Image 1 (tube, rainbow, N blue to C red):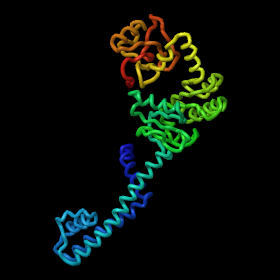
Image 2 (cartoon, rainbow, N blue to C red):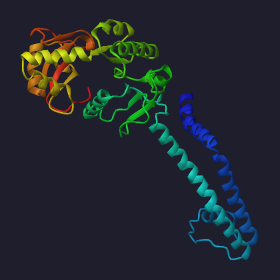
Image 3 (cartoon, rainbow, N blue to C red):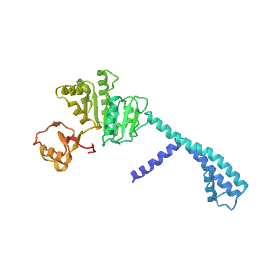
Image 4 (cartoon, rainbow, N blue to C red):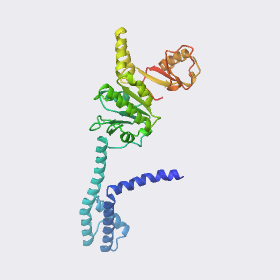
Length: 347
């Protein structure tokens, strides 16, 4: 019961704080005084006029709506109406302009990365902005599972770089303060993209330090880190990274493989991009396939779902078994790495 009261009272207290902060209580007080004095003045000059009717007339006149259902007949009542009309234009204009100014200022603050998003939950945080981050964002939005997902970008740039309603922007370096503004403590995934303005050694050192900061704020967040050198993978693992991608190493292996087996890079590009072709994704094991050999699972997935199973993620996040033996038993908590023929979907 106390929790319910708290949830009901919180929006009210937020509204009161907003009105006080923007000095709107004064304007509201002036409006109330004008309405009450106008109604009282009308009943004074026109004694046969009930006060509730006079109050309605004062509100209609102050707002310059002018329904015309009630109108003063005495000279004094008409003079009061003139005063209410002139004051109404000024006071209400100031009131609406103040509210509009607040919303415009909030919008500008968010566009410039000055907002706070610690009320988000299970969102994605992208750290750093460059061509690589831009492509990551495009790929995420092309995936049905993340098309409308809230994403917070933390980057030291002037303003929000793209027009995306569900992309929130926090301006600044990857410090504890800015990560907290991005909602790191309730985020599901954080992606640390290497700073291309730095040399390889400094870039990886910054990535490891940023990973340590992330780990200290939310040990449960799934962290993906891009490194420039394979030599620093062990340091990043010790810092708590869940997945580490070495850009140069990955590119080199793709190139060397494509040199001997032409067309491999085209296949990988299609599988890894949500924007074109089929997709490489992970899916939970369907209930009817739990406890069955991999070969049977492979055949059923292809026949019933149009998917090709390529690997098993043990316990969902454990070791990867690529091209498992046909008699490998699939467990309930495993995840399957598959090539999906259709749109990516939530799992």
